[in-house]
Length: 40
Image (cartoon, rainbow, N blue to C red; front, side, top):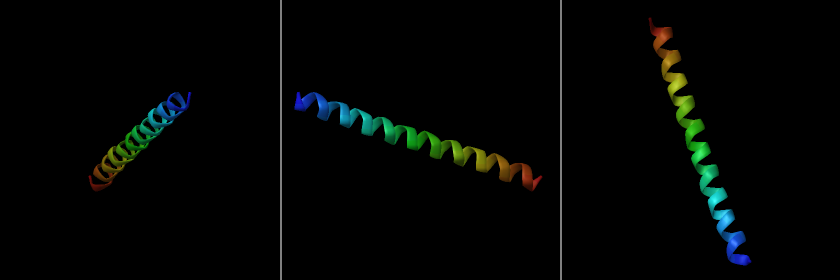
């Protein structure tokens, strides 16, 4: 029972980290696109 909860917690934590990375990459791409349009 404890192992199952621990496994779910680790999977949830990894999923949160992946979500954070995806959001961060998305912001980076949007910022780069905005600076490119501003420079033109």
